[in-house]
Length: 463
Image 1 (cartoon, rainbow, N blue to C red):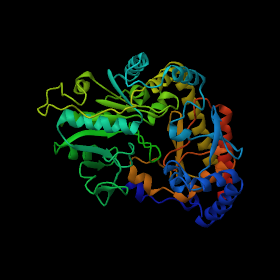
Image 2: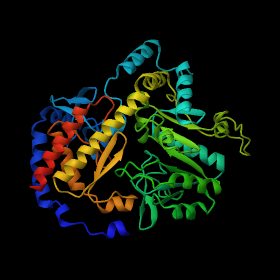
Image 3: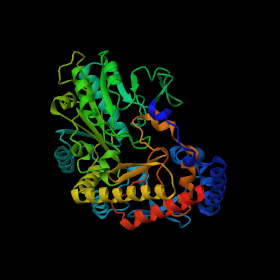
Image 4: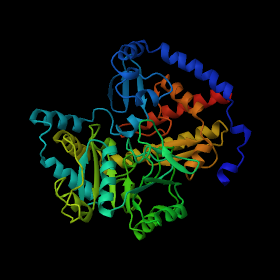
């Protein structure tokens, strides 16, 4: 592969010994300056595995997890009093910022009147209608996370097509679901984590992003229910689609009777109506979540009426006339609850406006420009990722086109150092698989602050 085979000039490489020396210093500083978090973590180990309420809070970071006191706008504060500019926004779930006033008011009012009834409220209608207007899919269903929305979308695709197999792209992440917790190893799809059934990977196929020949080859077998993809891969940095790739992929899928599920969970922060609207993407179903309700738990998936008709009877009957006479298993006691939908309505109507998205994209461009200038100043031939409000970097002269190319130039040790180095200077950097993003309440000054710390970091590791 040309990208991998290309030699990287030695001037671009950062000595590992220097990185490790600085890392030890920064980790010691991080732990020393956070005694309250250390104490709470030790206390937590007596009642929670690892001392945290979700194990990801340990594995996502190369340092001990902090305990958080609160947040406001683009910043949050830990229990030791350190304040951070948040460039990750809890993996983009808090891109609207902490405590957006319209959402706070809507949630408070809804709690007074009841947060859950296992019956619809008018807010559900307003949210579904607004999502249809923005994203183009006429019918919507709600869950509590994008992971569960992907589960139901895949289940629905199987019911519609009568097929079992799902096609994904290497480097993907579509939530904590069996179909996507797999990995490509030596050309074979295998379970990627412990605890999965040994046969969990049997109904998943994986190919490289931007490889239409591979898509054609897999779909030609005629057993794939759906292709699930992001419009741009975002869990391995940012990998953009080639011109025409997404359109051609949909054409191939439909020619072979396969549905396309577009997961915009991470990319919905990019533009009003997501990349679906910005790039004119067509799909059979779309999945959203993360910041859609301003930080309140929600997931949703949209579809055309001819697909949605398979859900009209619930579990009890199949109105689409399948021979089994059984409906598609979807739903949960708290799905589509009044609180989530009230928060989503307030977020859509008053926070995620066209003006907000335009401002976020401008800040993201400013961030990317600053990162690029910092690389040039440090004489590093690294490339800059650009995706509206989100940026990032590749430790190579070219941006990758697929996961193989991205992994070939990854440097986990360097990224681990960046996280703790930035945290010690009041910047909460993105998790290793992502990249820094401008939250909607952030300012141009905040972007400048990030770039200033980046320049300090690069000066130290290259001096």
